Amino acid sequence: MTAARLGLFTRLLEPVSAADRYRYALEQIDAAEAHGFASAWVAQHHFGEHEGGLPSPFVLLAAAARGTTRIELGTGVVTLPIDDPLRVAEDAAVLDALSGGRVQLGIASGGTPSSFAPFGHDFARRREIFDEHLAVLDAALAGDGVRGTDARIYPAAGDLGRRIWQGTFSAEGAARAGRRGDGLMLSRTQPRTAERPNAPLHEIQQPIVDAYRAALPADAPERVLASRTILVVDAADRDRALELADAGLRRLAQQMHGADADALSIEELARITDTHVGTPDEVIASLRADEILGQATDVTAQVHSIDATHELTLRSIELLATEIAPALGWQVHPA
Image 1 (cartoon, rainbow, N blue to C red):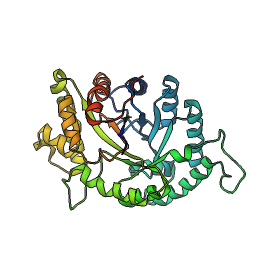
Image 2 (tube, rainbow, N blue to C red):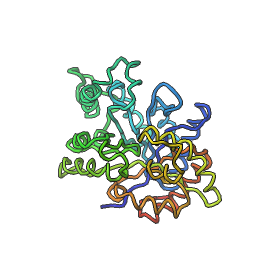
Image 3 (cartoon, rainbow, N blue to C red):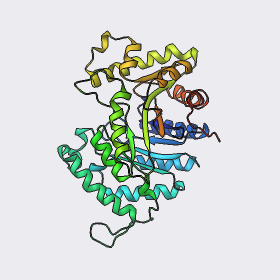
């Protein structure tokens, strides 16, 4: 398999104003391009600043397109059941034209129940609605008439329909993505099963990757993106990084595992939340233990749930490119 491409993933969770969050994200994407990252991804979240604070990923990525020339720009993900699929197709096509064909279109059925009712949709029907909206999205991107009409989107989407990725937590969802020839997006917050509540992330995700590969048509390229929480710091900043990680990882441990987070050390929290934080040597060692990363075509690094500063995030981007990627054989292409 070709070496994995390194990507950046940001959820825009810094404790600053919305304007500064968006400015920070753009600066981080600029830095990622300068250091040779292949892609930059942003998440879509509605109604509040604590989950992500970015309801309009195409708007932010259009701003990123103006300041960059090479890095691919991805949605990680658009919650398709609560979006108008025709507008998703139009917005993605406009962004693709603005960026010179750099869009990667990540979609999913959604995992935040509270986001559905304001848009007039039932969370319990999200899978059914996702399938309906995906059919409309496919037709629009293919240049077909939409919903039984002669209407076709402008600008034409070209091959954008072959750059769709699906986020999923299940082997069933992975098989659906594989049958279509879509990319597979793996989350760093993969839920554990009742039978294996403390299993490492790579063991839980292996059946998902296997199902995807088994369903993938022989002529379709394999695309597996693994998102991981990674904060790489200089030795002088190690204690500060662990201090910043403490509160966020305790929250995540409680949410994901129901763990008695107060009783856990920061090292235990990092282990059960699959967080890679520390000096380059420490992060290299922990990433090498993640068996999914050796099978991924793309690895995207995000700092959350660590409450990292913008400056530490920028430094981590640099260290990922100069120290981590060479050690693990990931692809980077600095300008």
